[in-house]
Length: 164
Length: 349
Image 1 (cartoon, rainbow over the protein chains, first blue to last red):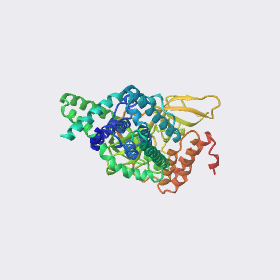
Image 2 (image 1 turned 90 degrees about the vertical axis):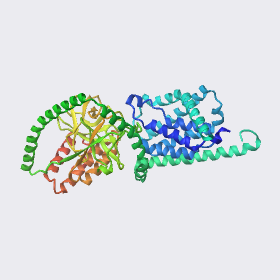
Image 3 (image 1 turned 180 degrees about the vertical axis):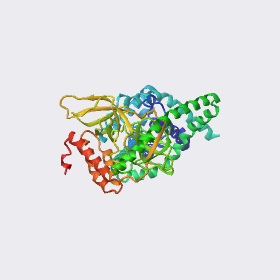
Image 4 (image 1 turned 90 degrees about the horizontal axis):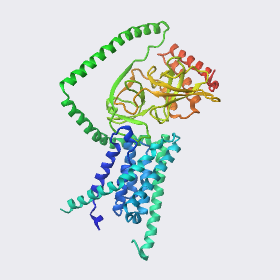
C-alpha cells in the first residue's frame, strides 16, 4: 500500500504549517472565522495512514498547542485525543464516504469538539461565548474538501521525492 | 484484519485497548486542566516548558519584522518629513501640558510634606510591542516582546496610550504574556474620577465591556464618567484611566446599580504598550490581596474583594514609609464601604 511510504517528516511539516496558521495574526473579524487547523490536518493523516497518528501523539501535539496558544494546559490535548479516537474508530467507514458525506461527518466531529470546549468553559465559570463561537466548525467543513485535495497532493509529491 | 473470523477477536481487543487509552489520556488532560486552573504545580512546569516553544514565536515574529523593515527602507523622504513635523508638533503640545504638571507636582510634594505624608511613588515605564501572534481567543491574553531578560516581572501593570490594558501574567526569556482587563477572572480596583467612589471593575469576556458590580444604589454615577485605577492593592498605580461609564442600570429590586463601562485601551487592536514598574518595593501583603481580588470572579465577590483591600491598610501602616497616608487611604475606603454595601461591617473595629 501507499501508506508504507509515508514518512513522518511530511506529517511534521504539515502540522507545523497548521500551527503557524493557528497563531497567525489576523484582524479580529477574521480571527472569529479561523478553523481548527491542527485538528483538520491531524484528521487527514489519521484517515490516510494506518497508525501514524496514535492517541499519544494527539495528546502531545495538543499539549504543545496549549503551550503555544496560552490556553488551559490539557484543553487542546483533550479535544485532539477525542477527535482522533473517533476518527480511528470510524476510519474504515469514513474513508469510503463520498466527499460531501465525509465533510458532513467532519462537521459533526468539529461540532462535538466545540460542545466539549463549551463544557470546559462553563466548568471554569466563564460567561458563555457569543454566537460566533460556532463559526469555526462551519468554516472547517467548507474548507475540508480543498484541504483534503491539497494534502493529498503534498503527500503524493513527497512520495515521488522519496522514491527518486 | 478488516474482515474474516480470525481477525475479529484482535479487532475487538484492539478497539477495547484504544478505548482504554482514550480514557487514560482524557483523564490525564482533565487532571492537567484542573491543576492548571487551580495553580497546583502545573503553572511552574508550564513556564519551564514554554522555554521550549519560544523559538516558534521568534519564527512567527521574524517575517513581520522583516517586511516592516523593508517598508521602512522604502518610505519616502517626504512622508518621513511629514511624520517628523507631525510628531514635533505633538511633542510641543504635550510639553506645554507638562509644564503645568511640573508646578502641580511641586505643589503636591509641598503639600504632602506639610501633612508629613509619604512621598508619592515614582514609576518607570518600559516600552514594548505586541507580538503579532493570536492566542486562544478564550484566554484573554496578548503577548509582548519584552521578557525576563529585559527585567519584566510578573504582576507589572500594562497600559497603552489611552488606558490600562492588563497585567503581566507570565514571563518568558524574551516575551511575556499579559492578562487583559477584559478577562472574566480579572478584577481591577478602580474609582470614579468625578466622585472618588471606589469599586472594582471586572472583565466580562468581551473586549468592549467592563462590569462594575459593587456600586451602591444611592451612589452618584452617570454615563460618561471616567473610571480610573484607585491604586489599592498596590499592583496598579493609581490614577490611570481605565474606562468610561457606558450605561447605568438602576433597575427595581437591585441591591447594586448595574454599571457597565467601555475600556479606553485598545484591547483588541493595540500595538505599542508600556510596562509600568514602581521604583520602590511594593508591599507583599498588598500583592497577595490583589491576587485574591484578581482570582475571585462574579457578583458575590464584591464584599470579598473589598475586604482584603481594607485588611491590607494596617499592613501598609507598618511600613516605615507610609504612615498617615495609608491611614487616610484606609479611612476613606471604609467610609465608602459604609455608604455602600455594609457587607463588610464585620471588618470594622
